[in-house]
Structures are given as C-alpha cells and as structure tokens.
Image (cartoon, rainbow, N blue to C red; front, side, top):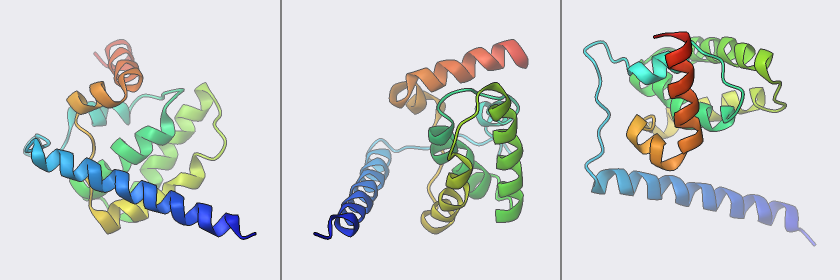
Length: 143
C-alpha cells in the first residue's frame, strides 16, 4: 500500500490550509504589522540578539524568516547566515536536532508566499510560552 506519498500529500494540504486560514484571519482583522521607519520590529530584533532554548522551529517559521525576507528585505544568503548564527547561539543553551534542516524550506516558503511575521500581540495569543520567553529574556539580557 502506498501510504507514504498519500500522507505527504495530506500533510501539504493541511499546512496549505492552515496558511490560508491565517491569511484570511489577518485580512478580516485588518492585520497590520507596525514598522518603524527603517522597517525594524523591536521584539524581533531583540529575539535575534538572544538565544532561546525552546520553540525555535516555530520562531524560525513564524517570526525570524518572514521578518528577514519580507520586512527587512535582506538577501536569501544573508538571511541564511543570520539565522545560522542565531541558531548556533540557541544550540549552546540546548541542542535541537533538525532545526537547521528547516532553514532553507522556511526561507523558500517566505520568498514564494511573502507572508509577514506574527505580531507580538498575536504571538501572545497563538504561542504564549514563546511570547513570555522572549519578553523575559529581553528584560534580562537587553533592557
């Protein structure tokens, strides 16, 4: 029985449906990310300065990659380098197998789809643990 390809197709369909749902919800709420004049989002810039021990795959997909590609407009190669440096710092806190394998697929998706990073207020709703982790680390390490 060829269940492997079928499961892959189902997974792709579900991920695509979730992305469409997120975009639909953002449009219905008149979602906007407030940019400073230089297209920097303070909480994400802070996140890139601190290592985190958990939620790295999520942070990569929902925050860091779309921010670098679609807000800061850095090149693919520069984004890849910035992400690798950040993940290396994170790995010193707690190694995570497989996160580096997510960089290129996440970058490609951000380039292809053009989605924006999650706002801090939406992050507090969608992934409270990560929002708290970022807030606590930024208070301790930056401010």
